[in-house]
Length: 94
Image (cartoon, rainbow, N blue to C red; front, side, top):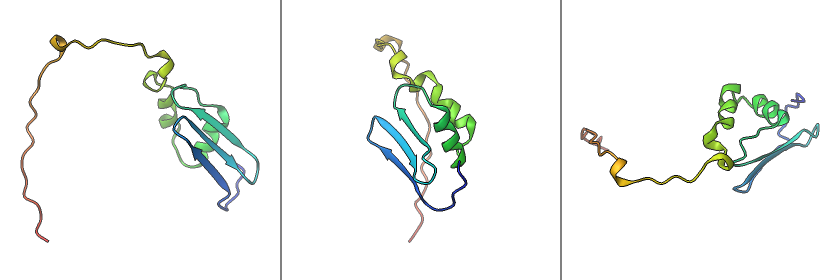
């Protein structure tokens, strides 16, 4: 974001929150897992690191928003068994 070419940016992830801070310009962001919300600062910083905006748009998907996921009951009668064919291949010699 600030054009600094030195490695002065820190990421932190503790399993719930992901945050980042630029020690040069002070840009920072915080993302809470499961919230589905990504701030403008977070998008700008992650795009500056080369993450494409279409990948960031996926974070707003309902599968990442745990607050909107309702409990569901899965019944065995509704499941269908499928058989996948996986061919065997020989391992390479060493």
